[in-house]
Image (cartoon, rainbow, N blue to C red; front, top):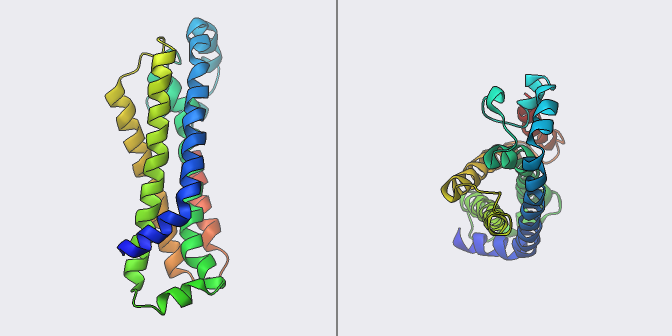
Length: 208
């Protein structure tokens, strides 16, 4: 299992690096707009109040009646959290199906399993790789927010709460990765609906 994880992570290192850089910079870019939101909080709040609660609930996990874009936590969740977990969830699905379905179609999985490696160890090694990549990307997001906290004093957010939000995002992505790996394992590669189901569950849960 350790060898599978090392190989998988080695193959994913560039993906992890560029995703970390991209999401870290994205976090900083998002927070760069926060001072303007805070200065014009009244106008933005009127606009937000004009939206139906069902629409606002798609982007905010708390009580929409308490949504205040001038609060750093609400701003991060609506402008960053909702979209970032969707993107990372889609990447986790892609990793799951690359590990099994695509590897089975191109014959590399058969060659690998001809070695003294059990299917269970192969599965655990690939899942650990996905968990590690997602953890590194979310760590980069946390670093981006901490840098933003220094650059813009208006972004006065609790560091423990930021860290907890990254942990929550990681747990969500790992739920997505778990059912994606399950679908990739139990559905034969000759069937082409497993990936569609995984993406439907991801997008559908967001919409619902």
